[in-house]
Image 1 (cartoon, helix red, strand yellow):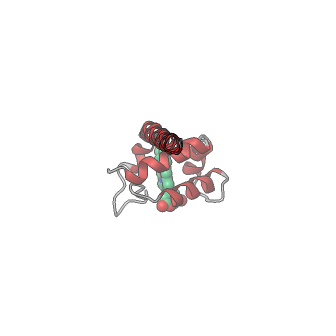
Image 2 (cartoon, rainbow, N blue to C red):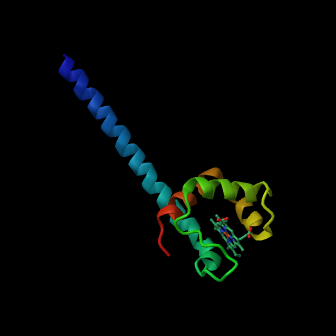
Image 3 (tube, rainbow, N blue to C red):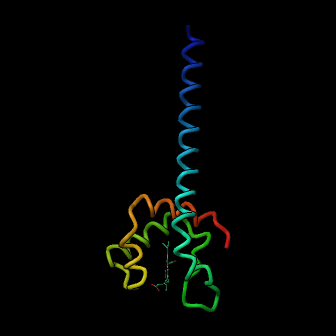
Length: 103
Ligand code: HEC
């Protein structure tokens, strides 16, 4: 009896784990897709350009900055109009993608 309960709990935990891993993969896929638009500018970012490098940017900072552009708390009009079209889900996916993406 106890054994069955333990086994059930282990299965539930495993299911939750795989569900979140799957969600993560979907996020990254969406992020990669949305990122193609960003590459035009950010793909060429270098130490001397005015376009910041966003590869490897921490997820927390990324989300914060894009949301700030979206509500126009940050002044750049290009990034404002780009952020305006992104949903929270898009932003999370892009953040997950860029944190691990290599140029
Ligand atoms: C037309 C060119 C252009 C495109 C396209 C573009 N960006 Fe930007 N981005 C910029 C510029 C220029 C800045 C710097 C703005 C500033 O100085 O405030 C910037 C800043 C940023 C920053 C802030 C970086 C930091 O550390 O402060 C992030 C994050 C960012 N962009 C993400 C994106 C994402 C995600 C996309 C695609 C959905 C994208 N950008 C598309 C030009 C672009």
